[in-house]
Amino acid sequence: MLSRVRDPNIRVVYLAVFLLGTAYGISIAVIALHLDARGFSKADIGQLAAFFASGIVAMSLPVGALLRRFSAKATLTASLLGYAVTVGLFPLLHGYGAIALARFFDGAFSVGIWVSCETILLMRADEDNKAYVTSLYAVAIAVGYVVGPLAAGPLARALSIEAAFYVASAIATLSGLVVLVRLDRDPPGAHHEAFSGAGAGRRDPVLQLVARIKTSCFATFAYGYFQASVVLFLPLYLVESKGIARETTILVPAFFAAGMLLFSNAAGRLGDRVGHLLVMRGLGVVGLAMILAFVFLDSFPPMALAVFVAGATLASISPVSLALQGVVTPRHDYSRSNAVYNVFYAAGMLLGPPISSVVFRSFGGATMLYHLAALWMAFVVFATVFAADDPAHGARASSRAIA
Image (tube, rainbow, N blue to C red):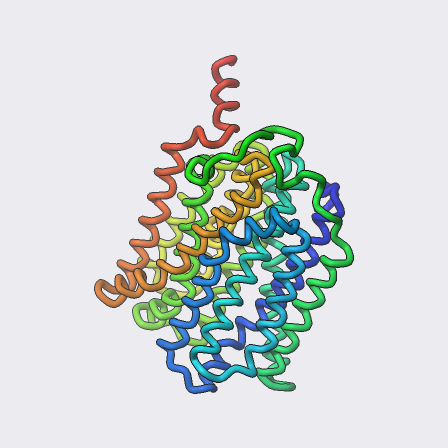
């Protein structure tokens, strides 16, 4: 699988994000239990999650500037070590304000990691291999997300919940050291107009940059909105409306992650071959059909299958949309475009839970699912209207004209 990845620096990023995903998985698995044990209410826990998304929004654009000023390697190393310090301090904090601040920096350092990694991958991937490279990036971090929670339980039982945070901090520190020691410096001129290759020249204004990557931005906004909403409210819907046992709903994220792990690489290969936006539209259609299926399914096995297919389609849109952005953006502008891209992802994470909560509370869980399906339908329509944003669309049109 890695034979198509020629640049060893890309493999270093994969190793780093696997370690990071493991650290994320451990901390995410125990954070709610830790806060509950400290006496925080469910409402408090939900509000604290919003500080994480706020950190992403606040730092998405500044981190692009930091990356151009100090390099992707320096920004990635600092962000990984900053996250390690934040998660290591977390169990030592007690008051709401201190924990909210920690969650904010958790998000701020996380977006620094994401923008740096995405910029390095797009910068070093071949032009016809970007979706393949970004899909393996998604797989690497997702495997960490699976390994982390599996390790968190035994750690918490054998030691303590607090010790799990310290282990997560140590793993994140190791990830930072891997990047510091193994990752090469950025290519000369990588973040400047003089960078050789297609698109070299003056930087576009931000609004013009957003217009160029608008379909990728809509895709990541929809995914952030959907992901943050279903994590909170799909288990409640299954328990309250479908009579599924609460302990059974714990398996739902595993089926979603399994779908993404098994299919995202295939989606990336297909996107590189036939066009990223075409693949994204197809994945969106199948994914929204799976969301609608939940309204009509009544037993857990077919629901688990629907979750698996939703993960295989909707979660696979994310790396393909990142690859599309890398195709339509000049190389010297990758850091800015990735920063903007992550602003839209964080905006979806911020808006999704409160809006979904109002819809769920006012109209019921089925309507909440309908509105998520409507969001993906809006994306499919948007991506159809702006199909020409993908260079592959023009290539297909030209080949049909010649034929």
